[in-house]
Image 1: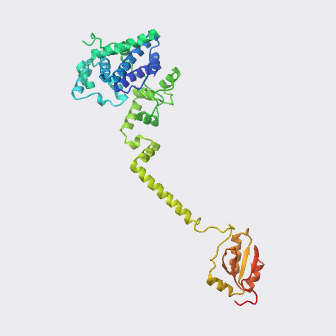
Image 2: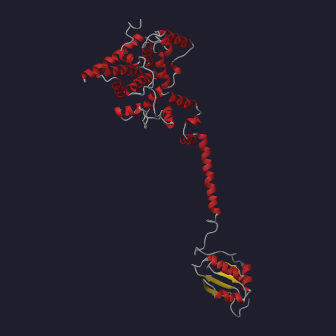
Image 3: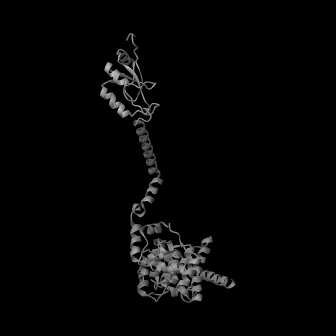
Length: 161
Length: 234
């Protein structure tokens, strides 16, 4: 396995950590593995900022009384499910799973969270299906704009530096 | 709907990251040990190394890493079916198999019920040890001050009367450095009756006239006196 492939796994792992809400990674971890994944500095920085924006939004929601970090997880899972070519079979499978009561509470370790991230690609979950998966009704558009704010803040912070 | 409402932003780079990857490339020459996997399950590993370096990343990707951290084990397990199976098996194993012997002992000792049993066993062990020491005679039968003498039946009124009624009875004192196994053998060869020692460290030897002569000229004898002086009534 090459370092680039390992870096890709590591970055997927960071997403899985966020799905699990354990978040056992820090900014230097993301930066190092983004650089290892993409040797173009600009692209590596953009990738790191995207990942860190989700983490920053989760932290913000965790500190807020009204917010819930699972809202950010909902956006993350929605985007993951839209990240590959649409697979109708995969979508139908997830539809059945959710009908049978599958939800995020069944994911108890990071390997299962990583499996979820990998399985969801191409499932093209609807907003309602994602809500069922995370166990709450989430306004994905609104949460996504908050994540966008965090992303802009990270990019702006670097521009100022 | 989803693509136009801005839900995907920021996502372009992550989307590229998650694109399907070519098969293969997951073979690793070395795997984390069972103890490392146990620590991983328990959350006892450090999250990351002190610093990430390209050299460390290459060691991890080549399966040559020794000091595993949480993120490294997680990344290895993500693409290693063998370690994933080992991990699942460890997670499903009973608690006693999931932890090492030392951890098991620590766990047992910290359980209130087993801690009580442990203290009772420790107390019993201490009592047995004290009993053994006392039984060995350390307290019950202290050595005389000379430290290297032997003991015979202690003097009492009956034996003293019996001894004094014999003109051949002798009080004998041996040299402190006398080899007591040889002294004992010598007294046995004389076929005499030996009593003592008394408070002064003397032995009363009861025999006949021949014995008296032999004892007086015997080895390691430093002092001889007769309890019945010549002409006294027995």
